[in-house]
Amino acid sequence: SQQGEEDPQALSIQEGENATMNCSYKTSINNLQWYRQNSGRGLVHLILIRSNEREKHSGRLRVTLDTSKKSSSLLITASRAADTASYFCATGAGGTSYGKLTFGQGTILTVHP
Amino acid sequence: GAGVSQSPSNKVTEKGKDVELRCDPISGHTALYWYRQSLGQGLEFLIYFQGNSAPDKSGLPSDRFSAERTGGSVSTLTIQRTQQEDSAVYLCASSPDTGYGYTFGSGTRLTVV
Image 1: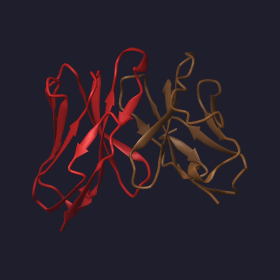
Image 2: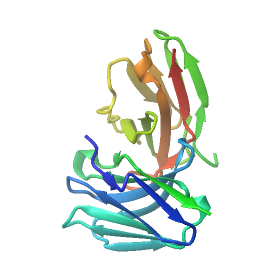
Image 3: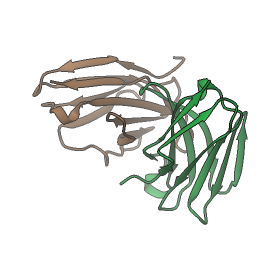
Image 4: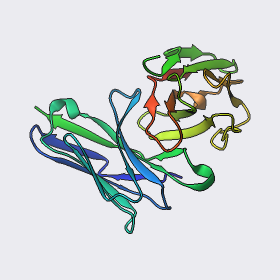
């Protein structure tokens, strides 16, 4: 079963607006990562946040992690048409599953010029 | 190399034939992963290799699927007696070690007719 569940499934906004995507998961994690996928092929790693961190920034990206609620959010500020893509959260567990990421179903983001 | 290289980029095969998919990871990356993605879906974990440890094969869907990694570098995913449900994009990724972000290849689109 999928560990991460993204919400919403699809998001449509205008250029310049902010986009927020959420991810919920079920079991304890070691880290949580966000990826972007264009045109259904290879994914690009955006940001990694570890379980002992609460917030992380990278350029126009801001990720938060709330381990008590088992949830994370990805905020893209001042969106651009080039941000149009599918965004996936992925969780890394500890123990014998360490290293293996479990991906959610993704959020399809469309940014209109 | 500069990135993760996968070949072929597209493969059409007849039902019942065997196929081999190749992945060339980033030089020096000790961890290598195989996932597959069906149309409009999230990523399904197949197998991962970490250094000289025994691979985690827990995601392989049947015994028709196997993978090897030679010399800690190139990996080959083999699907025997292909079925139509094997049609998907097969993605390979590598990382410097476990617990890091992945670098994905562009994938192999497998179509079984």
